[in-house]
Amino acid sequence: MSEIKDRNTENMVQEKEMKILADMYKRMTPANRFFMVSASGLLLASQSEAEGGRN
Image (cartoon, rainbow, N blue to C red; front, top):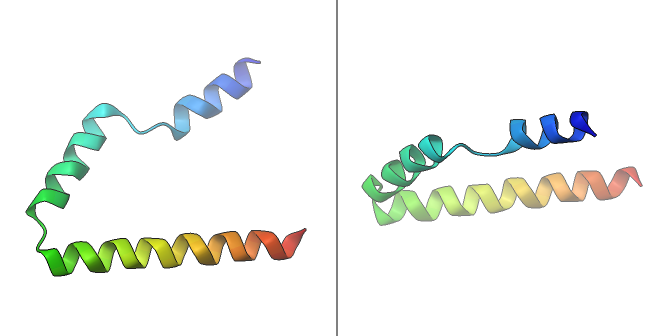
């Protein structure tokens, strides 16, 4: 049970990190924001496609 708890705390984003990321996002231009969101979406889609192929 403690192993599961340890994994969950490792994967959680710390509040300090989240504030840094939010500040970086606020300073981006709209074009950079669009690119970042698009690239993130494509990465997530490719990961889920790769995981789906393993089953």
